[in-house]
Length: 105
Image 1 (cartoon, rainbow, N blue to C red):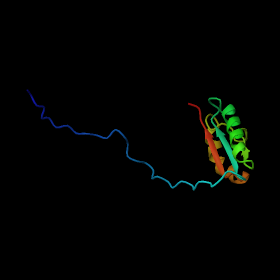
Image 2: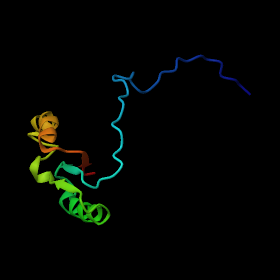
Image 3: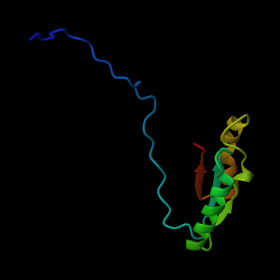
């Protein structure tokens, strides 16, 4: 029986962390009376999914308001960089309280 006594360096396959973990925003206690914006990358039936989400959330929170994904444009594609860069300003001007971001798989 032979025993392999060679020594090898071991490397970690992941890169070093580039960013620190950021604190997340506190959760809303309710969606009632809140404005929810919908973001979508225009892939995988988001138009249908957001319709279902709106109906389901309206059943639970009668006073929730939605700003459609149509208002923002695709979060993926030719205009992606500009759309994403403008999101904070646009959300603030529209009084957005929460976001549902949908993406295709």
